[in-house]
Length: 123
Image 1: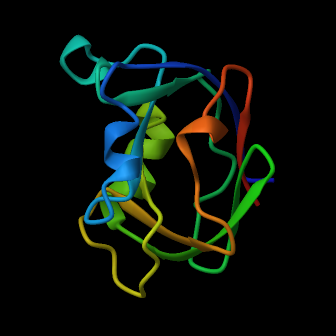
Image 2: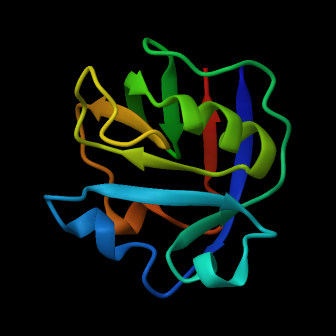
């Protein structure tokens, strides 16, 4: 396992991007998120990134499984240092932005999947 963390909360607008098909992402951040980003972030426990995520790795959010199809260079360092990146569920072989991890899965991530104490893992 490369990373394991637990969701501890989220901002009022954090799940709005998930319902927008043009966006289809969540922003994750350690609990010590800067105040100006807290409203749009899914917060989680501060944990150590044990190895750099790569295309072909698997992300689990609760019971949902997603394959990493691409990862931006910025996402690698911000996940390690801040527990921060954007998890985008549109797939694709090129990250839409440097801070994105592009994911693809058989089932979409829904607002109801984001709950307190749900794990986020990278394998």
